[in-house]
Length: 78
Image (tube, rainbow, N blue to C red; front, side, top):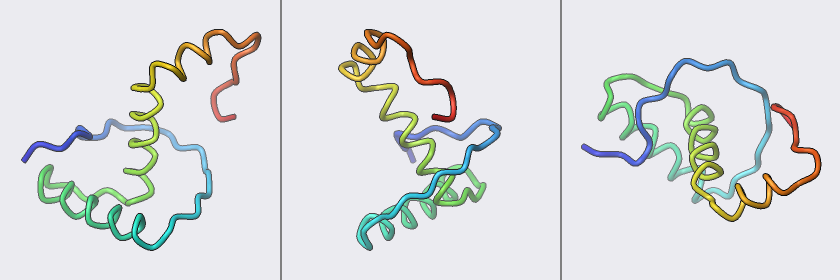
């Protein structure tokens, strides 16, 4: 199976709380199950969501341009 999100590397997390609607939460749980079937390792939905957000931000060219143009970029963890 081919997932858009590759196998996650080791990482040190920064805690952030998000509220999801029930449909998004259920889809994320399903993604976690398919991830485990694909890679043979379980990952928490929270961990996968963080990687998905990271991928989304990295792929948004408009965001990258706007962030680069900011006078003082936000530090990691902000």
